[in-house]
Length: 88
Figure 1 (cartoon, rainbow, N blue to C red):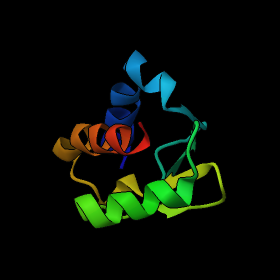
Figure 2 (cartoon, rainbow, N blue to C red; figure 1 turned 30 degrees about the horizontal axis):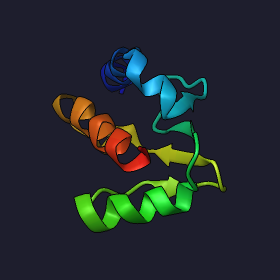
Figure 3 (cartoon, rainbow, N blue to C red; figure 1 turned 90 degrees about the horizontal axis):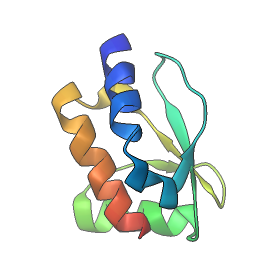
């Protein structure tokens, strides 16, 4: 889990993501949350599921919960690239 959490932190350092979301603090657990900017989190969740077969949880109107524990480390960068496309 720690390796995945570190990879998530590394990927999220990309400055382009700042326009799409804010990252809530997280540790090397199982989940992390993003505060989505400018679009409803449920809309993003449905788009990810329909277009990319990618499941996340809309915790409320602005927050997405992502279970990085079930993502292979080599797929983390692709996940956030897809999420970025869905938000913008």
